[in-house]
Structures are given as structure tokens and as C-alpha cells.
Length: 263
Picture 1 (cartoon, one colour):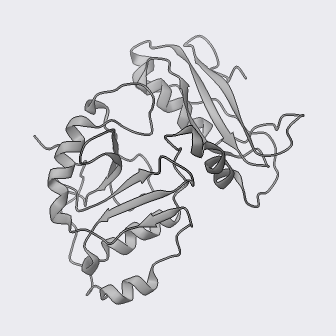
Picture 2 (cartoon, rainbow, N blue to C red):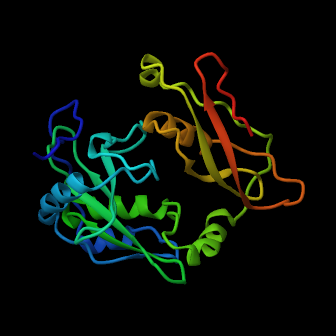
């Protein structure tokens, strides 16, 4: 059975007349050099992709723990224009990192993108979008893609270039800011505890540009809370490395402790 997206209102109301595809293309934002977007495919192809990826995929922002599709997460970002689900399929016809979007009240996605990362240098991300140009959905996807941070490569050969793309650029210095993650209420209710080792990639100002699970606590909820908190951190630069870099820190979730990063 196809899972329904979370909904709180009726289907989207009819909008003003949509701009022409040519006008949408003219208004599309510039994309980074490492991102290659192919021609849009029709949303009618999404039902099969959604069904296949939902059954076999996994949330790709909560890796590397093997998790079931029961852990599919809806966006918790209140500024997101539409509910979305992010899943990764490792192999087969629909392999790639997917973002499915749906309007409120819908049971099926109306738009999506699929990211396929290059396996050999240079670092590159090929994107297939599924959308209705006449409805303005393709422009909305391209605007989101223009703000996309480069996804972590699947092959070590592309790692150095990815890290350079991720952490390069101007930044504003500021004080160290590493607030402890909030103890997830679900984990608290279950008396779940553990230590999550988080890998960080930071820029020359110590701003964390990406964070991911290096060693799991074996609790998806705790892992996610630690990663989400770490992505908002500004870390102290190592004395012997005054610039962009990487680090691994541990975050302990202990009901009796203050849940501070161990460092």
C-alpha cells in the first residue's frame, strides 16, 4: 500500500494562471557547476518510483544504520513549502537519493528529484526531476536545487573535491557554539540512552557545513537528534589547522546527565 503524506488541509486551491515553460526557464536560478539537471520527466512516472523506493529505500539523512521504511520521515522544517520525504535506494532502476513532494491532502507525490552521484572524479551530481512545468513545479524544484549543499560522495576518490566545494567560500568569524541536542521525547519515554559519534565537516570559520553519523547509538531517534544539532554548530578550529577541515565528536544521551558533547 502506498503511504500517504501527512496532511492537515484540503488539496491545494487553484492558483493564478501558470507562466509558460519558456518564462519558467528564464526565471530559473543558476545552479552550481557540480550539479547537472536533466530535462524534466512527467509526474505520471512518479507512482511507480514512489512505490518502489518506499518499499526498498531508507532515509538517506540518517545513515549508516540499516533502517526499515517505517522510519520514513516527513519534513520537520516549518519553512518548507510542501511536505516531503527523502529516501535513498541503493540499487536497481530507481537507485539514487530521492526527495518526493506532495501537496496537502495528497496520497501520492506530485513532484520529485533524484540525485545520482558520480563514482569517479570529478565530483558531480546528476539530477533527474519529475514535475509539471506548466504548474510551476519544475521552477520550484530548481530553486531548491540551487540552494542544495553538495551531498557526500559515495566513493573516496571524490571526497577531497567534495570537501573543498562544501567548505570553500567567504564566512563570518564568530564564537564557538555547540549546544547540546534536546533529548528526544520518544527516546526519553522509552528510557533510551547511548552515545552517537558524529563526523563534522566545517569551514574556515568553524561553521559546520555537514554532519553525519560516524558510529551509531543504535537508536535512529538519538542519531537524528545528534546530527540535527551538530549541523547548527560552530566549532573551535584546531590549533594546527586554521582552516576548513573535519572532526569526529561524541554526543552522549544520558537521562541523568546534561547531554553535553564529549568532544
